[in-house]
Amino acid sequence: MFKTQRAKVTIRCNICGEKFTLRGRREPGGQVETGFKQCLCDNDKHFSFNES
Ligand SMILES: [Zn+2]
Image (tube, rainbow, N blue to C red; front, side, top):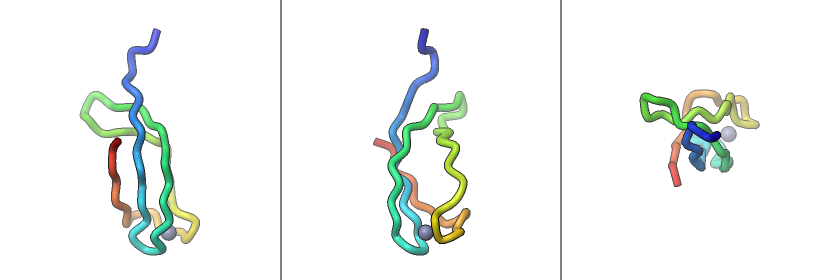
C-alpha cells in the first residue's frame, strides 16, 4: 500500500548553482519532504525548488 504521494523535486543552490534531483514525499500541507539538508557549499537556506 502506497498512500503517500511521491514527488520529484529539483533543488538548485542559489549560492554555487549546484543542482540536486531528489524524490520526496508529499506532506498533507502540500510541501514535499525530501530530507535534503544542505548543499556541498554549506548553504542550507538559499535554494530554488522546482517540483516536477
Ligand atoms: Zn551550493
